[in-house]
Amino acid sequence: MSHLDPQLQQAGIAAIDDAPMPPRVSSLNNRFSEFVNAAPLVSVFKSFVDPVVVVAVLYLLSIPFQVAFDGYTCVLAAFGFLLSAQVLDGLFLFVPGHERPLFGLGRFAVQWLFICVTLTLLGWVSGFAAYFHPPFILAWFVLAPAALIGVHALFRPIFFLPRDSVETQRRAVVIGANRPGVALAEALQTDPLHRINWLGYFDDRELARLPGVKASRLLGTLRDLPSYVRHHGVHNIYISLPMSSQPRVLAMLDALSDSTASIYFVPDLFVFDLIQARFDHVAGIPVVAVCESPFMGLRGVLKRFSDLVLALLILALIWPVMLGVAIAVKLTSPGPVLFKQRRYGADGESILVYKFRSMTVMEDGDKVVQATKQDQRFTPIGGFLRRSSLDELPQFINVLQGRMSVVGPRPHANAHNEQYRSLIKGYMMRHKVKPGITGWAQVNGFRGETDTLEKMQRRIEFDLDYLRNWSIWLDLKIVAKTASSMAGDKNAY
Image (cartoon, rainbow, N blue to C red; front, side, top):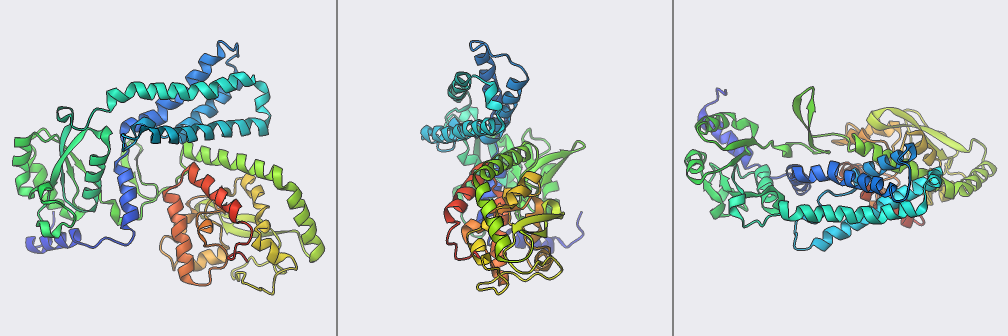
């Protein structure tokens, strides 16, 4: 318990509650809404129901097609399960704004097409497709999505009850009209799967100090809460108060001890720069991850799988170009064809990154000078290699080695990492994942020389945004934008 004077303590609490939102609040609002808005039902469908339906259709089709469900078919089923669990949205017929069900179906069609293309490319590259009868695979590609739509349509009337069915909803209030409280209230109102009738806020502050809160939604102060809960049959109470409000929270819990309402504490995650926030357990103890790699568990397997498929396909297409570039580098300047430089990899571990040599120097020490326009260190074809990104092609070999990804934050020289890690907040968070050949910052114009601290800060902002919002779709978007902008990038030198 605090020993501060109650008036000073209350003033401190008010100051915290009234603190202005940081510039990144819009992004954090979106991330927090996603964090608290993850309905368990969606998770069940995404992680279990949809993948099981996909595998079940494959098994049932093996009977009329007289296909033995042996090791090869089990491997195909495993890939189908994995991709379905990671790529499909979950309840695609239950999207917010359910008056537009075709939106969910269209998104589902694109996702299923991606699964089919990925499995087809994998089978073609590995030769695995030769073990299966094409009509059997085609039938699976057609009937599995039909079965998924049927299952979702079956569950829709069961789980998707009208929001105005008050008797089916649990009544809830939010304690504290601060940032996380407002985000939670918005999530409860927009997600029909929660079946919660949100009644309003309780807050000790006056309405004038609660911007954006309607008078009809401010139900009273914390002193009014116990009486309101008893008389209105409130089922859920969400406490969204800062940690410094511990005395108020303890007093409120004591006053609610004779009610049957379920009480939840909403952590104020806005004090953190959220990177893949989620709940987890460590040895049975619940924990909240506020900064984690997006590639944990099955997502990491999917990321590695997509890296291998893309790298193999691209190398199969560009090996003649790589051979021509290697010969040109060797003929136009003395020295090795490949330039190897130490960079930070995942978790900050040192890795060797390959590039076609574009300079007459081989800098890899404590001081590395970035390339500039008309740099005198360029070889006769060095400037062209860098402008066209041809010097980066050997990094697809790094991807096969597992050192890099096709898409991720671009690796900087170790000397630059040591320089900027103390100057830019959150700089080292970009090293929670493998570096990429291309990245979100590069396709948004932050490629090439970073001659000012502001340019590097903007690049890091895009890198961290990539970590927060990673999806296989974002990777494909970045690859497509990179391919369309490789020629004539004015920032490449």
